[in-house]
Length: 399
Image (cartoon, rainbow, N blue to C red):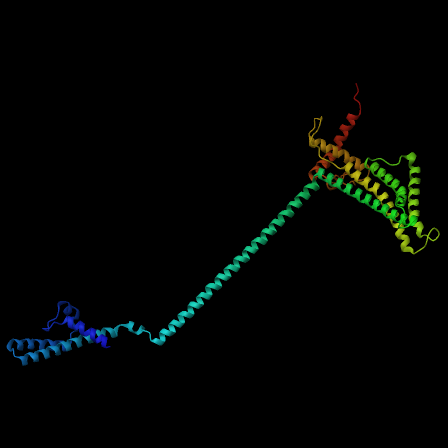
C-alpha cells in the first residue's frame, strides 16, 4: 500500500506545479472528477500568491512554504484517492493467488502432466500392439492365400491329368509298372525266405552256401512262367497255347508242390521234427506268397492292358482322310461304343436304346463334350433315315 501511495504522490506532483496551476493534459484527464479538496487547494494557492506579492519577509515566506507543502500534500492525497478508486474497481486484483494456492496449482499441474504422459504412453503402446496384430494378421492371410493357391494349382493340375487322356494313360502305365514291381518283389522276398529255410534244413546254419541255390532252382521257373503270363496278357494273348496248356499247368503244380514240400519237410512229423502249427505256417507262408504273386501278376497285367488298349486318345491329325480331326475322333469313339455295347460292358437306356452320356464319359474317360458328341452321333446313326440310307448303300444298284 505504501508503494501505491508513493507512486500516486509522484504522479500528483508531476501533474501539479509549484504555483498550484494544472497542466493542460491533467485538467483534461481529471475533468469533473475534482472534489472539494481541489477547490480549496486552488483558493489557498491564489491567496498564497497574493501574500507573496504583498510581503517578502522571511516569516511570510516560511508560512507560504508551509502552505505550499500542505497544498502539495492534499493534492497528492487526492491523486492517491483517485488511483486507489481505480485500482479497487479493477477485477484482476481478485485473481492474485496466495502462496498456498500457488502450491496447490503447481501440484495440480504436475499431476495433470503426469496423467497426460501416462495417457500418451498408453496410446502409443496400444497403437504399437494394434499394428503388430495387424501385421501378424496380414502375414497369416498371406500364408493362407499362398496355401490356397498351391492347393488350387494342385487341384487344377489333378483335374487336367484326369481329363487329359494322355495323362490318364501315363498314370495307368505308372500303376502297371508299380504293381508289377510290387508283385515281383513279393516273389523275390518269398524265394529269399524259402532259400534260408531250405539251407538251414539241409546243411544247417553253418553249412555250405551252395545249399542256398536249391530252393531257387524250383522257384525261378515259376517266375519265368509268371513273366510270360504277364506279357501275354499285355498283348491280349493267352499263355500257354492251347496245345501246351496241360503241360504248363502240370509243370506249375509240380514246381509249387516241390517248393512247399522242401520248405515244410523239416517241420513235418514224418519227414522232420514236429514243433507246432505256428512253425509249420511260418515255413508254408513264403511259398504261398510266391503263389499269390504268380496268380496276381497275369490278372493285373491283363486288366491294365485292357484299359490301356481301350483307352481313348483324341486324334490330333486326321491323317490322309478328308474329315476333320474332331470328326475322326468322334467316329472312332462311336465304333468303340458299339463294340462295348456288343460285349455288354455298356448298359442301354430303355427310352433311347443307347448308353447315357455319363456312361460313355466314365467308360472312355473323355470330356463330357466329347461324350455328348458321340451320343448325338449314335442317335443320328440309329435314326430311321440313317437306317434307310445304310440299306440303300448296302444293296447293289441295278444296272
